[in-house]
View 1 (tube, rainbow, N blue to C red):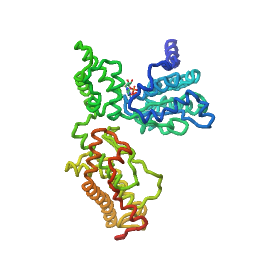
View 2 (tube, rainbow, N blue to C red):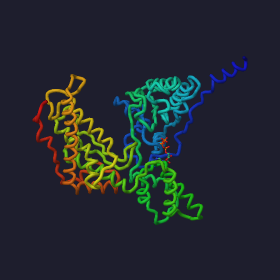
View 3 (cartoon, rainbow, N blue to C red):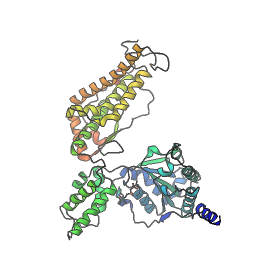
View 4 (cartoon, protein in one colour):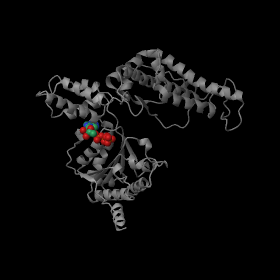
Length: 477
Ligand code: ATP
């Protein structure tokens, strides 16, 4: 019995250890973080705030206290947080959230309390919580333990308890933003979310620059060409390549690193990542034309959905993406505008067809978006040739089999016509499509100014502005 009690006592009262602290002297400077210009721009104010909170306080500004860095593993989230602490002269308290999730009831919550207590005592400070999903995954009911729940609640309590002028910033890191509990992302908590993406060509060259700094390099070394051959790799993997290259050179008794050392290192690192997506040259061409298709079509359809950025650097399950941002917030759209939007969604697949004469499985997400929009147009908005004065959802009222067939036909017609029109426009504007695709193959990412330059002289062909205000009715059932 005694033994049992003693055992229990030891079990329920484990020591609450303090978080691992790395002080401001941690040797990471702002310049050590390469190729993350957008993220760095967004985060610079955090440094200013930690250095001089009064500057913001005087203006009544509320600087975000919780910042979530999200992106694939090894892209530099921890590095970025350390660099901010270092630049701001703040203490850095780091803890992985998986360390909070213990089998002992309440221990995770106690650890969180302790972590924040220490940070407050040592302000200015940054609390960095890695692998946030370990405590912050959505509470689905299955597999979410009471312990995780308590730990998450404690984290929310700490985040809510911040005073506006307290010089403590909490930075969380996660690979999967979409899986995080919505409660964590509310205003006042992790309400600033910053993407730390896999680097593009220029980014990879800059990262290689950082990690070859101080290494003796032979004259012929061409970092740009190494960057070109490492599409899809993250900062951590590039650091690994630079390190392996130095090891190869050392083994061979060389005094400097040669290009062939990097080639060997690349082979080794890429071979170790075999399950990972490293695109072949042919796939890169297909993705470049696919994304160029979206970009050209966005331009041709006018200002409806301007392209902010287009890239063939993969992110999540997407091999490339075109980021469109509406030029103004709109709540109302005409039929013609939606038809233009369908063309933009389907232009990736259309470009593949035009250029390669065949299509790939890479358009699944686009097809889904097009299908959903066409469905909403016919079923909900009365924007089809079948019915303009009512919805066509079967749950509203009984539809005859014949009406359902007409409705489904209309939905298919909208996407088919948009696809045919996208094909026609891309054939007509093939030189623009080629220009964008080649630029993507060369630079991997194009911003809106670069796109505008490449598309100069290509006139928009949108019908949406011509027909606004008219309703085209062909047949009502
Ligand atoms: P995880 O999600 O797995 O925690 P992470 O995004 O936090 O990964 P880091 O731990 O910051 O990635 O990166 C690991 C190492 O890779 C860094 O210490 C650094 O040497 C190198 N690295 C990653 N990204 C960059 C970058 N953008 N610039 C320079 N070095 C980088």
